[in-house]
Length: 106
Image 1 (cartoon, rainbow, N blue to C red):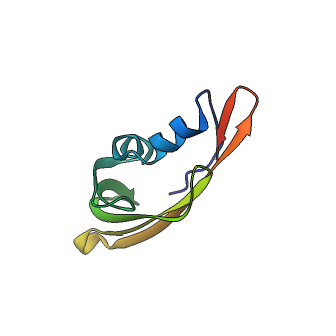
Image 2 (spheres, helix red, strand yellow):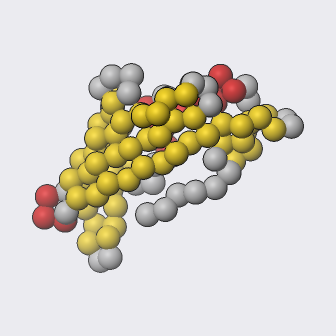
């Protein structure tokens, strides 16, 4: 699964940063995410439904916020397990930049 792009957001940098650190907002941003629970300021547990070829499985996922550079960037890393369906790993680098009219999230 690949998620990439740039999004113009008409909000303050701090408001966008706060949203990127809010488990409910992150849940909405992760395709197939059914639940997301903060364990600490930098650790979360999630359940993500994903399809790999013809197999659909629920992955129990541990997420970590790393390389924190508030309120500019961070790396979201994850490790998932789904029993017989296997496992997965991933990461997302998020960056906030200033732009006319708001912030650009990439």
